[in-house]
View (spheres, helix red, strand yellow):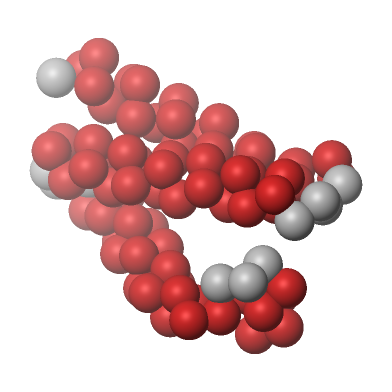
Length: 87
């Protein structure tokens, strides 16, 4: 994973990105008890995945290499949409 972040030219952001991903996933789980936390977490993870897609495109990755970030973008976007509609 360290080498991947070097390839993305984002090595200095590896730890903050990992922390944001962990906080986002914890927020999604805690979102069962707090709808506001679910919305914030889903929105944050959706933005992270969108930035992941942009990064993959920028460095010239293939469609298949970009697909996981795209799927997570859609899933988190769907969670966000449902959470916003329920509030």
